[in-house]
Image 1 (cartoon, rainbow, N blue to C red):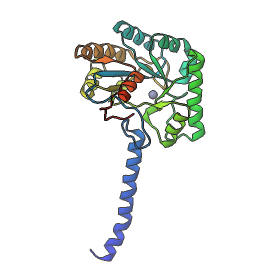
Image 2 (image 1 turned 180 degrees about the horizontal axis):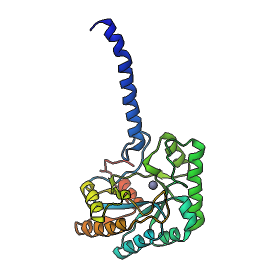
Image 3 (image 1 turned 45 degrees about the vertical axis):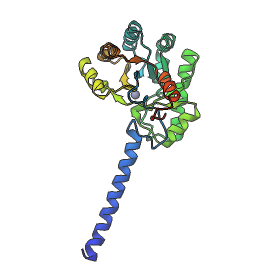
Image 4 (image 1 turned 90 degrees about the vertical axis):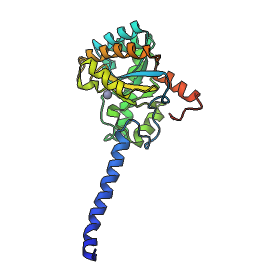
Length: 253
Ligand SMILES: [Zn+2]
């Protein structure tokens, strides 16, 4: 290779490195299991007999209510990452969730993409959601899930300044695409191996009142199938407690 072709390659190599770096940054920002931007909880140790259902983008009427009925009937407690502006709209639903033993987490006030939010905006989003839940229930959330799973170092730092523990997931139900319940069950089942934190939706960040009936049905079907296999259903804090206590666990929080 002569000098001239080397010189021509220079900018190409530079561009390649830049693209790779951008790829890594995008991966750290969006991949639920990536830990490069600081630790987030993604699940219990593989092989554990615990499963945690998590529901985002509520409270929602009527499907948070229908979901609560199914969970009550099946004797399961779950974790709900709520949107502050919906909490203000229906504080009664969030109160009922807490009363029924479910756990409430912060999912911001209006569900923005926090990767592109400045520090002030991020702080306001988290604070307003904390306040809405506290006004509704008397208790401030201790868990936080960023909208779209998107975060950067600043996002997690600000969450921790509110004593919020960031929680991601390791099983994606794809239920926001509104497939039939059987499809949601199939998607989850192919990713589940115990110690699962399953991402589902009882609401929709774009409109209040979204139809989540298929998620409600899928929840019941998953409980039936996995309970028979000897699994138990826990909240995220219960799974976290188990993970910390087990010294053999290789999965950190
Ligand atoms: Zn969401």
